[in-house]
Image (cartoon, rainbow, N blue to C red; front, side):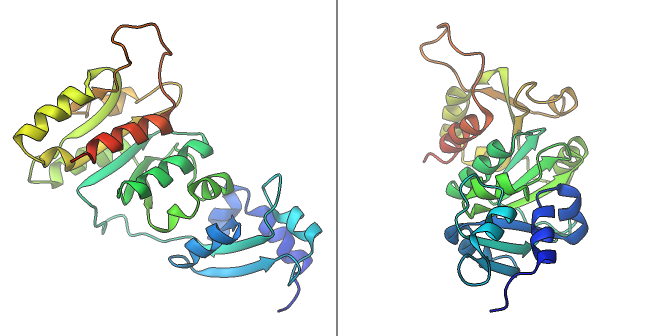
Length: 248
């Protein structure tokens, strides 16, 4: 196996920046498990392994981790035709989620609960950011992430779906999620066919998107009306909501 070159080290380091990921169409993953999982669904362009074709110093120079794991893979980004999506019955939408750790955890959570499509506003964090990729623990291989004009996409989603599919949104002033879904379970299973919108860490769902939401919901605190934190972390809230939607 040919030893890594200085130019390759420089290229891998550059992929920590979005503009170079976009320009080259590549992204980086680190660690044996993450690289192995992504290799099943993404084209592996380069593989660098400490002691084989890279030194510890070279791995450290390329890594975005405090403690590099000794294996770095460079993958080709997935290309998608936004007009030809085949989506499952339940889709997650993210409106301005900006923390890479939150996005990575959300992708991993969607993988666990069988949600295969995440539709993101253009100001949501880049799913190919190294911090996001590491937080997914390989889940990015099975969850498709799309970037769109979210208000426009949600409006078109409602028009294109001849069968009624709700657009849920997590809002502090929304209805108790458990009571809403309890009622829907009694009536039918159609509540699982729609979009769940989660908002920005500090500002929640934008006003433009709020106007499109058909079913505002909230995760109630316990006990009711007790003094508590103002809100939940968006990745934790996503896990709670998806768990309830997937409950039999």
